[in-house]
Length: 93
Image (cartoon, rainbow, N blue to C red; front, top):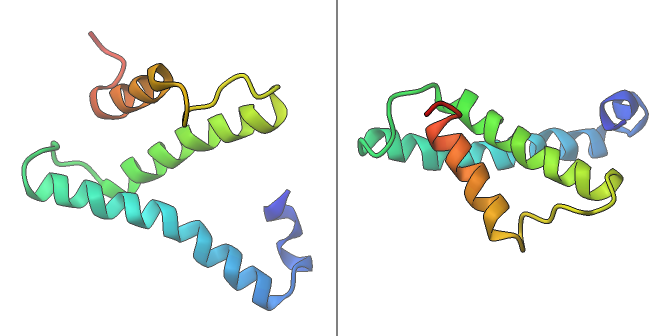
């Protein structure tokens, strides 16, 4: 919805949206880059990894807003653990 309305928001609001859009992935990207540099994570494209992580989080936000609010990753440690596990270890055995 926000993307569809970008032309109607006005320049100031549009700048805010664009800067916010890059803020969260940028922070995550920085953490991941440090982990790669310190050999805590394998070498990956940290921008792609950060966007994947943000996409996973966005799915929970959408679920909470439109899906009845059954998943709350901030309070359900099992969900948080699984998201982190999938991000860092993938789905393979």
